[in-house]
Image (cartoon, rainbow, N blue to C red):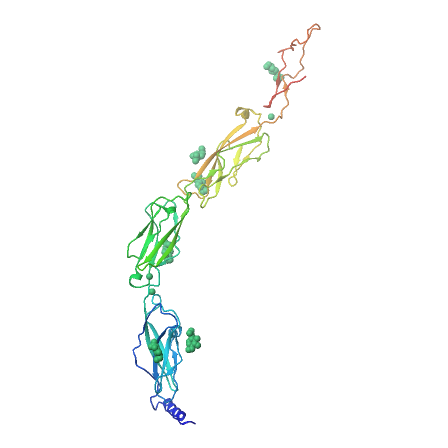
Length: 399
Ligand SMILES: *[C@@H]1O[C@H](CO)[C@@H](O)[C@H](O)[C@H]1NC(C)=O
Ligand SMILES: *[C@@H]1O[C@H](CO)[C@@H](O)[C@H](O)[C@H]1NC(C)=O
Ligand SMILES: *[C@@H]1O[C@H](CO)[C@@H](O)[C@H](O)[C@H]1NC(C)=O
Ligand SMILES: *[C@@H]1O[C@H](CO)[C@@H](O)[C@H](O)[C@H]1NC(C)=O
Ligand SMILES: *[C@@H]1O[C@H](CO)[C@@H](O)[C@H](O)[C@H]1NC(C)=O
Ligand SMILES: CC(=O)N[C@H]1CO[C@H](CO)[C@@H](O)[C@@H]1O
Ligand SMILES: [Ca+2]
Ligand SMILES: [Ca+2]
Ligand SMILES: [Ca+2]
């Protein structure tokens, strides 16, 4: 065995039983390097030197904690004096001051045949204005009832900050001019404050417009800009009654149609288009003995069979005026939203009665044989033949 190697093993043996002090020793230099956030990857940050107490021994350098492994790489060590070695520390990741703890507590280990000895360095990261102002609480998607009063805060959750220092950490907040939103909103921001709100300047109307996009601009003291969108959804408020598709409904049904014949179907919709309510129908005026309305469907039915030729019907010319109401389901008190519509139903005559002569007996007339042609002939009794027809269609006589 070579003499140097023998000495080395002897010392190592004595070290292992603690007979001599033989740990490696770091050069006791201050280690507080300062680098800005934009230091390029690959930058050689600093050198560390250690000396082994075991003659001719090798030194092995390594990163001593996860943060150090993450941030830097160590070069191959090189000899820089008797039993003295130096290692370079090289940056392998972008430095950040704004979102992670600073300074960075780096730790390094050095080991020889004896023990491992650690030392630390505080890497101080200097700020660069590398962030535009940042919006918090995103996304900004307020939902606003259309009847909210002018002047109200419609969104108060805008929060802005800038993690940089000094001028780069200050900012202003403004609302982008938008002709589409002219005069509708205003931004409420106090300089120096990290919060802002949007107030309403003029009334909203869901039927007219149900969505607005507002652009908010934040600019830091060194000119970095960020924007955020506020998407305002206008919500429908139940403020419009139902409407019928037709202003009036007319229907005709032949007389003697069987009971429960359908007459006409009505249709109404909620005037509030956002969350339209279901519609029900009911008969509120007109003859409910003869007609009914199906609540769910709006179908008008005739309840009984009708005779166009009876006295009551002749009196009204076979025409019924009904009023049907459409009303919203779950309409809130105090008043239900309702709409009325007039439904005119005509009972159509059909020719279902034979004409009758106004006598049960035969007509008798006496005619002289010299009566000239085209003379009137008078019957016995009243003299005329009377004919009756219950139907509303004209009677045609023929001989
Ligand atoms: C590290 O040491 C080498 C060799 O002595 C030298 O060239 C270099 O400048 C040193 N680097 C730093 C950052 O001190
Ligand atoms: C770190 O250094 C070692 C050798 O010194 C090299 O092989 C490796 O690629 C380096 N890693 C990075 C991320 O630069
Ligand atoms: C404001 O933002 C916070 C955080 O995102 C959220 O929990 C809260 O619901 C928001 N409030 C409104 C009114 O949007
Ligand atoms: C209002 O609507 C409710 C639910 O549809 C209904 O039960 C009630 O009868 C309605 N009231 C009036 C006065 O129309
Ligand atoms: C509908 O008709 C009913 C019965 O005549 C009446 O009480 C109600 O006020 C009317 N509703 C509307 C909206 O005209
Ligand atoms: C059977 C019948 O209806 N007879 C009538 C015919 O018309 C005369 C005059 O209008 C009546 O007096 C009869 O009763
Ligand atoms: Ca920064
Ligand atoms: Ca900034
Ligand atoms: Ca008839």
